[in-house]
Image 1 (cartoon, rainbow, N blue to C red):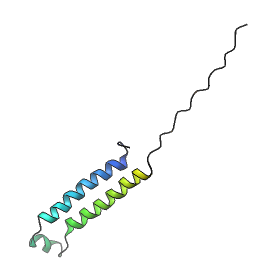
Image 2 (spheres, helix red, strand yellow):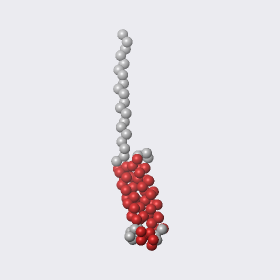
Image 3 (cartoon, rainbow, N blue to C red):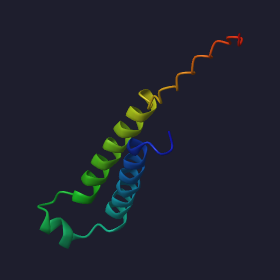
Image 4 (cartoon, rainbow, N blue to C red):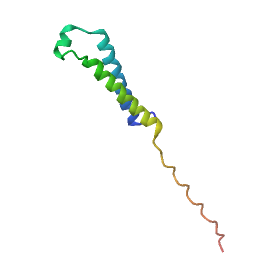
Length: 82
């Protein structure tokens, strides 16, 4: 499950989402609010990314990749030499 692409995408989106949420809580200025019309874009983008990360990791956990088993070769029958 470690190398499933859904896990990697979920982890990356989760990391970026946490960074954006922390950024929105730490750097809140009137200048940035004026640029976005009073909407905290970092907070909403971070929460959206965290939500998508939860979906990807949940998807990977609930429907793991199934590696098909190799079929065992049929044992050759022993035929004595005549």
